[in-house]
Image (cartoon, rainbow, N blue to C red):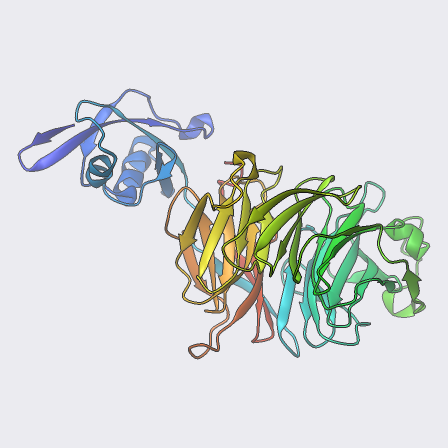
Length: 441
């Protein structure tokens, strides 16, 4: 690090894991120390002669650059003689609203895990499916009280455009519907009868599909979580040998028959208060969060508790990074998103925490295909996009606006790496498009 007159110069070596067309020479060269990520992005664009320009973000020692290089080096105490290695990655573009879906009451749950549709759970007692572009596909009735949780079991290899919609709510039961979406994704081609899963003795707070779509888990105010079997494929349930057979009856002609199924394959016990969140680490491991200030992992087959993390607050939302490892959770009144890596073995301390929301955070979701990106939402009505390598949000969207202390967002999820979906007390599903090329980093 040197200076020319009043201007500090920092020698940098720029590296990237991007394709060859985005790589510059690894030869170190000097740049002004006053440069922030925006100035650094201009340097890379100039060297690559990109037209139109492409925004980049920058990492030093695995940390996002959010100050000038000079201030960063001073904070890190890096030697003035060192060459600074700077990695550049695509920047995540600001979200833009793509569509919205109106409900008659609060939208308390949302799921975007299946590419063919987005599911919502509403206090109006319904579960709904929307196309990725926001077109309403079908309304699924059956719950006697508000619905607060929903998940989608992805299609098996034989299911084609079919999925299983699973929801739970205040009536203490879990319901499942087999739905086949037409090839264009514009309508629900077939809708099977509702199947009812009984056994919980309290409000269902959360549901989550296993990674292979064979099982799903549910959490309840009865202090337990349960693992249920899918029981049969979409098309066996519907009696449809071929989902693309145009001769099959449309959804409105399906007979409404209800089947009641037994009380869960495995009951997960150990919490002393309501189980408020469930999430799968793998096909064998389920994590639960509770108002008893703990997170627990369970063997999904045996039902035994494997690991417990003592959280400082009650847990309201939980997400497990794909492939396991990092947990993201939220709850209590501290307005923060917390992280914990169970591989570290520390049972009493969060690995890190992120602060930016102004009200209680109630929902978190990892971006598919990314180790570092996630979304959060809170009672402040905002959806925030994060990269956990930095302390500040990448973007903040006023997804569910309202008066102070009344603008409440209730749920958030990703629909692929390039869409974020949310629901709130305004009764709306919001779908946001995100320019995200860094989904694999």
